[in-house]
Amino acid sequence: MSALTAPVVEPLYDHAAVEKARLVNQARARLLRSHGAVTFEMIADATGRRPDAVRQWVNRRVRAHRMVTVTHDGVTLTPSFQLTDAFEEDRAVGDVVARLVDAGMSGWAVWDWFVTPNTWLDADTPAEVLRAGGADAVDRAVAGMLQE
Image 1 (cartoon, one colour):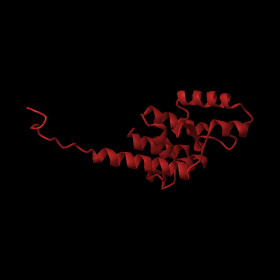
Image 2 (cartoon, helix red, strand yellow; image 1 turned 90 degrees about the vertical axis):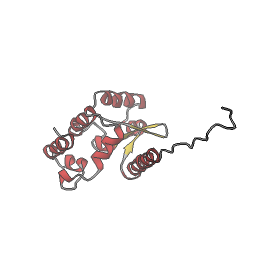
Image 3 (tube, helix red, strand yellow; image 1 turned 90 degrees about the horizontal axis):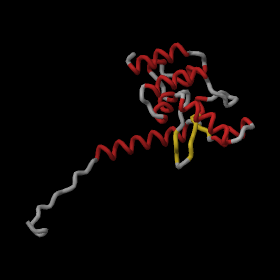
């Protein structure tokens, strides 16, 4: 068969993949626009520490599944719901982050879960409920989501 007589094969367009990518990027843009995140440098400025020391501190917590980070435009961001007002680790949040990461959720997914109104929490966000001392309610919401 010559190139001139070979049948033309139409490409298979993956519209579902394009739509999935659009939705993922839309959700990430919403997080970046509407919910706080800080860089290592911002934490360093606020706490009087060196940026490399902050990077090590955050990375140790990420490796221990106590915190998550995300990367946007080449910059590592730490969603601020995980930090106290003094930029220390919020231990109650860290307990929940560990469960979500251990269940396979990415940093972006964990961030989204914490700042999205949750029906298990009467439409409050897990981050709000934890700040108000509702660790037991958030534990039940995680258990419900993970079907534990």
